[in-house]
Length: 346
Image (tube, rainbow, N blue to C red):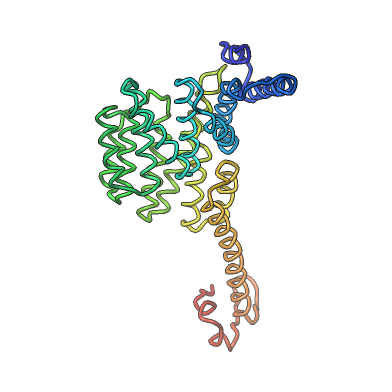
C-alpha cells in the first residue's frame, strides 16, 4: 500500500517501472517468509494482481497473462471484487494478443458467475457485453457479434466505445460506407480517457486497406501515429499510468507495417513490424508478414540490380562529349529478355 500511495502521490517522479521493482521486492520478501512459515498463495493474490496490472499497462501482455493464469486457477477462495478484476484483466490481455480460445474460457466462466447472481452491477454487465462483442468479432462470428452489439447499445447507449464496436462490425461485413458514417458520428471524447482521433485515424487506415486503397491507408495510419504521439505527450504529468493506457503505438505500428507491405514498401514495413513484434510476439501472422517483408526487400534489390544490368548491357559505347554526346546501342538488343526490352533507354 505504501508503494502504491507513493506512486499515486501528486507530483511524484516515480514511474511504473519503479512501482514494478517495488512490488517484485515485496513478493521476494513474501517468498522468503513462505520458506520459513506456510504462506498461502491466496494471501499474495492482491500483490500478484497489481504486478500483472503494471505489466498490462506497460504492454508486457505475455508476463501479465502468466501471472493472471496462475491466479485464475485458484480463484474460488478469493473475494468477489478481486475475482472480477482478475477475470476482466485476463480477458483484456487475451483479446489484446488475439488469444480467442483463452478469452472464450474466461468469458464463459464470468457468464456463469453473473447468471448465478442477479445483483451484478450494470457496469459489469455492460463490460461483459463489450468483451463478448470483441471476442465474436475476432472469431468472425458475425451473427453472435450482431446480437451482442444490440445488447451493448441497449445498456451503454450511443457512447464512443459502442459506436466504434458497431463500426468494426460493419467493417467485418465489408459495409464500409456505414462503418465510416458510424466513425464520423462518434463523440469526440470518451469516459475511458481514450484519445478518439488516434482510434479514428487507425480505423480509417484499416478500412482503406480493406478497400485496397493502400496509399490512403498509409496516409491515415501515419496520421494515427502522429495523433498518438501528441496524446502521449499531452498526458497528465506525475502519474504516467494514463500515458500508458492511451498509448496505442505498437498496435498502430502493426497495422502501418501491413499496409506499407501491400503498398510496395517492404523495407519500411519490416521496420514497423519488427518493433511491433516486441509486444505481439505470440501472433503467428506477424512473423509471416515479417518473412514476407524480408522476401520483398530481397526481391526489390534483385529487380533493381537486374534493371541496372539491362540498362548497361543495352549500351555498347558512348562517343563525343557535351552537346555532341551520342549513345551507341548493342546490335543484339532484341535478344534480351522481355523485362530488359521494356526498359526505356534515354
